[in-house]
Amino acid sequence: MDAKVLFNEKFKDNIKCRVCPHNCMLSEGKFGICSVRTLKSDIPIAINYGEIASCGVDPIEKKPLYHFKPSKNILSVGTFGCNMTCTFCQNHEISQNRPQTQYISTNKLINIINEVENNAGIAFTYNEPFMWYEYIYDVAKSIKEVNPNTSVVIVTNGYINEEPLMKLLPYVDAMNIDLKGYTNKYYNKICGAKLDPVLETIRRCNDHCHVEITTLLVRDENDSIEEASEIAKFIASVNENIPLHLSRYFPRYKMNNAATKVECIIEAQREAKKYLKYVYVGNVDGIDNNTYCPKCNELLIRRNGYNTEVMIEDNRCRKCGEEINIII
Ligand code: SF4
Image (cartoon, rainbow, N blue to C red):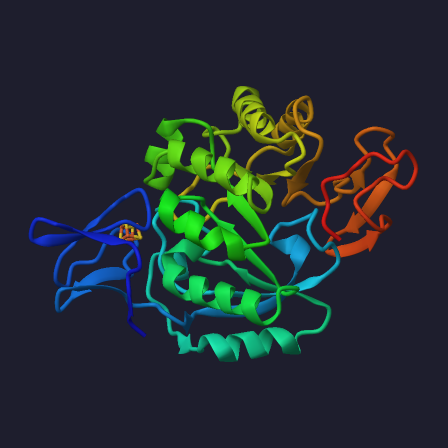
């Protein structure tokens, strides 16, 4: 379904989309980089409003969120379109193509959330949620008006302009933001974007909701110790309590580099732990991904795959009383 693009401005004879830092010029029938926004009869529109391409119930740890409602499920939905062109994209069928979709109204989606067992709320994920901005804004706002205890989660590349982000954040509880690397060269070459706007998004979100960061370490591209160090130092400069997930890359889509060496991931984790309190590893079997108290090393959450045993009742270590950045 079509919806008017909420952030746009007239520019000469055209209209500029102001949702993300690409600031695409939209003209009749010509789409922006995301392939979802265009001009139709002089009105800037997004063509994916309420169009669901993927829907499932996942453990919240799969987003990944390790410090937000651990052991809960979360209804997860996505549509199509993306403002980045990552050559390793795992979801390129929906991010770079137009798959079959089913229209679900905001009210119907909110009813579905209430039917899921042990559910924390809703996660906008799979493709880039901000490319669905008009719909997620309506859903998130309605949820918070009807039932503020239902959590709204966004799993994003963080490539959004300040104004739309700030308008949405009052209705968001938690975000996992990709920090894909720490050089403009990497963002330009691999993702078709720039680094600075993502860093800004991380800073802004940290002031408004729970934040976790994911970095996919791609062999021979961003898997050096130096880059892991820069990433961790930046996150620590924002908040040393932000959990970082270092994820192992495997060949996908247009990227043929061999899988990242496990030793590189472990070394990157060791380096990042010099600056951050919580650093986890993704896509590696048999790794210790438990949460320990950063002060006394008491076990707080035991994870075995997506099996999660929570041994903390509020946000303090039960042994030493240290405050833990966790929302139960
Ligand atoms: S949301 Fe789409 S159309 Fe708008 S600026 Fe970003 S890529 Fe361009």
